[in-house]
Length: 68
Image 1 (cartoon, rainbow, N blue to C red):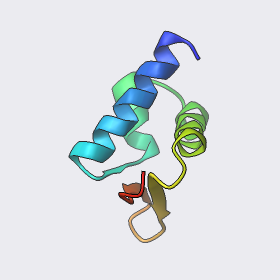
Image 2 (image 1 turned 60 degrees about the vertical axis):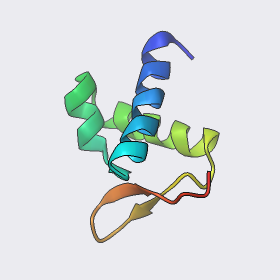
Image 3 (image 1 turned 45 degrees about the vertical axis):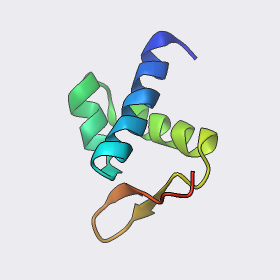
């Protein structure tokens, strides 16, 4: 994982800790990345932190679960 990917992963964790949720648009705006890259970053976070967040279909965002 390069510095840019690691930074985005750390930011996802921070957003979940502080605000309790995150979505692709947050990553896209903060880091000026594409939608596919934002999706990949979120999937990487899910893979590396199983149970840390879940997708809420109603609000269309990932929210902290508190299990990781």
